[in-house]
Length: 609
Image (cartoon, rainbow, N blue to C red; front, side):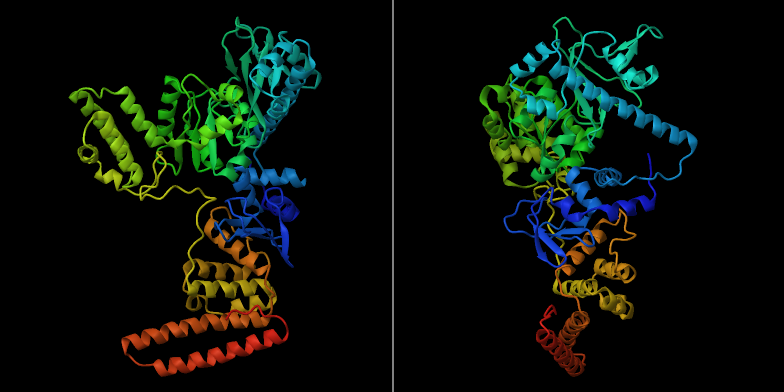
């Protein structure tokens, strides 16, 4: 994997225009000298609680608690890791990334891969042009129209057509300077019987580009147009660039909508995904013709915390859902099932009944555990005692995943009704041998935290609770950030261990003491909690009127709260010292009042009371 120099990262950070970047996701308005605010792109809200500091290039939402720098913003909104976010921003702002010095073999492999990616991108463009401009592709256009797919959405997904001649693509890319070896390594050509003549791998087929999260073409899925062609679907061969089962069809297009919705819909076929996007369900991705893999589950978890399976309602589709649950087990994901009518797929349903019908089904998705229970009841023998015992036994591990809840009681009642047994008896049998697992912490693939709280993804977690002492300590850091020169002196003079009660805020104070001018400097992706807190403080500081008085007032307020706590403790213990602490409290209160009066007289006023 290519690594980039620290200087490259800083040049990207410097090039980012934070208002421009964040403004693509939410409408911003100025709310101070160095602050903009808007509706949070990570959770639904009506009143803005999301703000950015454009100078420091930081964001923070006081509603859901998400915060960080430009790299973190792109990671969350685009579903990328840090390296992907760095490359995304470099592309957006025209910064050339410099890789860390590589050995010759590694550098050659990187150049080879980049060359193949360029070839695949050119090939996708070739296929798109051939679909819409050639007479040969008329039957392909007619087929796609018969599935109810519009040209605009097909162009968005870069759907194309591979001509029937054996060497049309080969001749085209050779003219562009690509060698036979490169065409072969990209999975676009194959040889007749080993080392024989080279010819196009894809011919007389509708072409669906298979892309990574950044939209780079890695390979193709190809649907046969004629009944005489076998197989019906043909994918790129495994190679240097394409690896089957690692990516999701349409993820590059769906990721923004999935992040916003907090959920991602999973369909099977390429046309299913495209039809659902056309129907307004823009958070839909596809499995690329494979059973759900560990790598794909990882991709899904980066898109959203809730997965809604809209797989065909036949036996194969149901088996695919069961496999999905097994693969997703142990991850912090909420798995739900979209109840498709038997014998239909999403594309057929959208074409026959329209977008609203599909939207209603998605809205009616049920927790995977309900689907699992209903499937066992529908496939099991509920007419005999032996059959009922077998169904109860099969359901026992399912119920072990469900905490005490209304859902659990509903499902127990359902099992009792279908087996003609009392719910109390069914509940006691289902609980046998499941206590340890049912009470364990964590989260299963059935979509509920085992403590009973509905699962939250990284963009919907509540902000960290802040008590009065921590709030006062954070106000001091905000004041220091708002007036960096005086703030640096104040942080240098304060005894951080004695002055701060909260470990995270204490860590922030130590870090800011050396990095007040560039708050997130030398914080990496692994410092997530600390980075989020510093982003929060910086966004607040961008709205504050920085002054030495504000810093002094915040420092006095911190000490005043500690003195009041100590006085209360001394009075409760009866050990004495209350009078001295009360005198100290009066002195601090008078000093704070003088600072507030001075600030009001000069129309400052940003001093904590």
